[in-house]
Length: 215
Image (cartoon, rainbow, N blue to C red; front, side, top):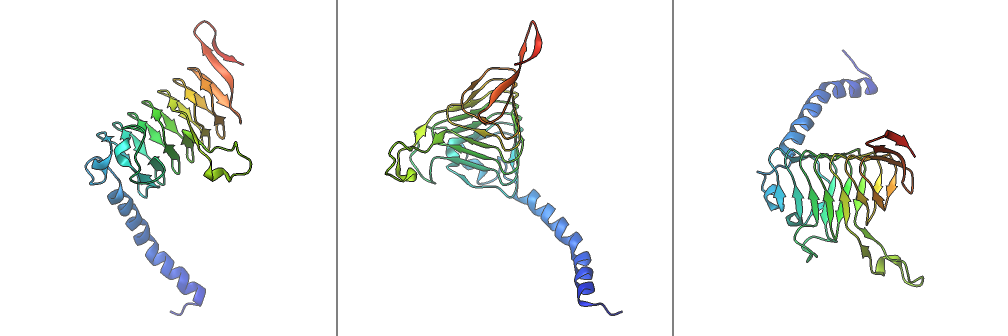
């Protein structure tokens, strides 16, 4: 049986595809980072049942990062403490992620001063969380050369952060809060709220005597 050039390519692809798919699946399973992994032991703490999916994003200064129990960190997620590996940090723990959390694919958690994510927090993919902003006061100096400002970030237990939202320095998010997709949060959000937009604003809030109220 003779094949055309395109036919040969199609035949080879069909022949090899199952092996490639199975191999990649096995690779992701073997490459998963857990508490008993050599690198997992470098973390400030790494809870039982937790894992960082393969392939990971950028991860450095693991000693200043805590991960609770039964937490899932998706593939391509970056976890960093400080500006560069080996840097002298401001405190012992910079990034803390609680129990039973799920951090979506491609998200970035970039800590310099202090980021606290409590238990049962879930995020969509490509969420960005940081506690540092670049300075821009001097109009004659490139922004990257100016002193940054640091403000801690807190994300309360049970909250859900929608895809591609941005959590900026100084954000304090209460418990069981919904952050809409693409929202940009920089201030204080009380418990049991729904926030959307850039800058984020409260559109719904739960009151014990009224239930959910549209703001």
